[in-house]
Image (tube, rainbow, N blue to C red):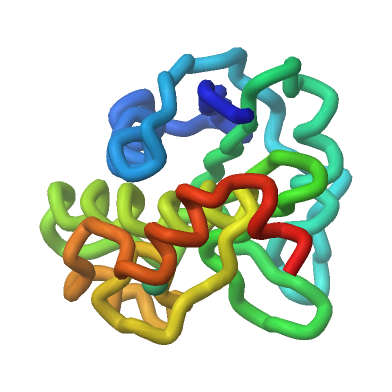
Length: 175
Ligand SMILES: [Zn+2]
């Protein structure tokens, strides 16, 4: 059972952003938070043609700093992609127990809103690392992030079915 979330900056990331990213996910999933070491910007995952970083490559690499009983959330201020999805904000891998957040597209005129969006988006990344799927309920914390401004409408909680899926824990993965 995962009880702790280690948050690591990927490159030069403001501490306030790391704390915001961790805050809501920690509350929703009942995780203890630890601010981990700062890692270098993940140049190994950079795709020059897209000008973005490959989410899955970062998720794999983050396992190197993960310890037993914890998941790792990496936060960068860049854009992410996956080969079948041009723009990715948050992603997580339930087998690796790692999550990644790229905040480049979350910037709002009001800095407080930017942090709020980061906190909502991290819930999706961390939820996926815990074995949850993205959700169709637009108010749910696990709702698919289509556009950054949809994050502003989230309730900050899981819907009932995601709550049930999470409380079942690892057994839910088998389905
Ligand atoms: Zn849901």
